[in-house]
Length: 552
Image (cartoon, rainbow, N blue to C red; front, side):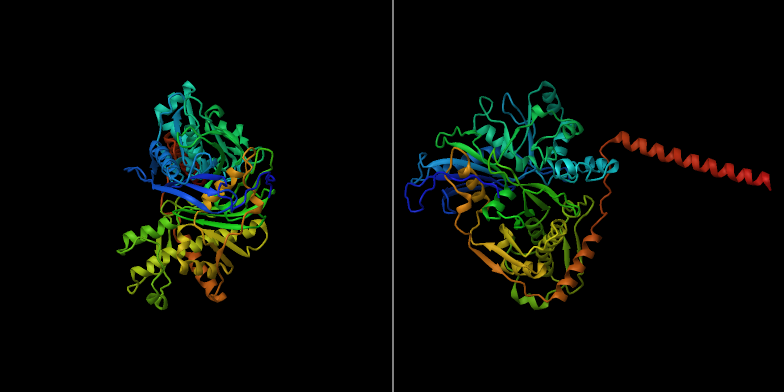
């Protein structure tokens, strides 16, 4: 792993030891954490929930960017108001955020031109389908490392330019900024319209479908294809350097880290070596394997992305990633809609364990991501009969998370040509101990679940403390993270049967949505072409028949 040597190390016993902050923005909450430098000790944190805006349009998922910004400010102010925390002790902060969520705003006024469109929003499915009718999904893989999918920011930016007249007009005037959540936060925290720093990092830029994975810059070919000006996009920097200063009254310190939430968790769990694999399971999910300095372009439905980029003079560490569109969200959806008392991911009741029904739930609420990339897939439940209980369907929803991870791990092993011998996991779903045992069973590998929960925040703080000019955190010398270990216990024949049945269920989820293309003109042209071709064939058939009659 490419990391800088740290020049200033602080003793954990020192009561005046500096603190490093971390802002974490997920799809469901905003939080601010204060860590002792060079440790996983949390001094104070404050968290507030954020909710999606109500929409009558199918597949639209939006949040209020002003509300997100205010929640971040609230979390910082409430944490800094803690009597044992002083501004002098906090030396830097970092930001970890959900990638793919994007918005537009006026750079002169700071007023948002759109809501924040979440990564899981599928309004661009028609646009992606139009792309796929003309191109292979991996057409630009050698540039950006990604297959075409509605989850990436570029398609959402193109949609805004095409469908929102205010965004289009502001772009023509040269006053429009597009950015992911990290860019929006840093621009506001560092001054906004007056002096805000318009930047992002390589881990977030890699998820836009616009960054050259080699040069780590916006690619001109992709910008031209999507009709996006580079002036409207932030400058790409490393994940660990000083970008600017916060302008909060209670906190005026350098912002020295930006990193995607999945990569932050990978770093927080100390996945430093090539081959280290990690799964993050929350509302959605992801499986990432560190591939070191080597880029591997997947042939099995995965993303080539950045794992870490630990400073402006350092080479990036690459990764292969398999995003999961629906993890904990699928479990909560089943519990809400199948008449259960609890919406939490609690342990499956032991009294039903011996009567387990082999029911399978494919949680394609908005299609399937890696390794299938099927926008036309939808949820199905397979294998239930008159004796099936709601608990069996809940169990199937939980097990679907584990099966999806197995799908991705299988693809990872094919791409890296090595077996995954253990898998580190964290996220809300991992609190279910019986589910983690099933994960070990179905994967047939050791599962490591950390005893601390805030690994995403820890990864962001590590990068912030590691930055040149801060030098308060030696990533290489972090204390070990304690883990609960789950070893596989399931018989190999049962593993095989269960996974075969899951795979059969996934295939049955395909093709339930007939997705039209974005362009109406293209629809008419296609229809006219079919009619014309049919007419020509009929004419040739009749002519040939008449000729045959004349000859005989």
